[in-house]
Image (cartoon, rainbow, N blue to C red):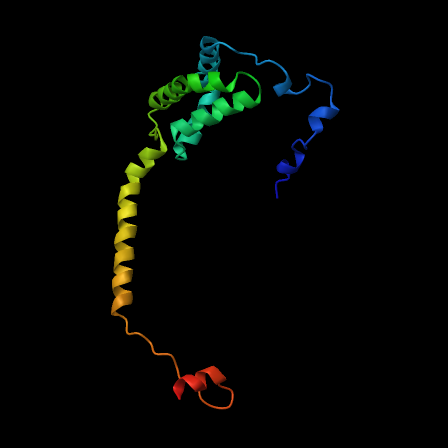
Length: 165
């Protein structure tokens, strides 16, 4: 079992170190959207990183998900802020698709592409469940109503015996 989750910071740990030692205690390295675009352009278009990007896309991970992982990781490393990450997301997605197109790799842009690929929309699934519910109600109405068994004998409750008389 991977014990990586046990190696994370514990609550209050930031109070036991010198101020400024943690990434979130310092200002981000990039605060400008243009510089963030340059950062991602250099990383994604670097040929050394192409294999990793292409492997992820070939496994069926959507481009939007990969872009979100990249920008969230950069926020966690304090490279840029979350708002800058949201602003550069479309650029990250386009860069990833550019690399995939260059290597002629098929990819999904978003999770909705996978839904379209399967062929069942959430609306169609909801309608199917509603139809199944109606059929179940119809079957329940057609079933004969079971009568309660009559309790007799020494161990029968008194209330049951009184109802019969």
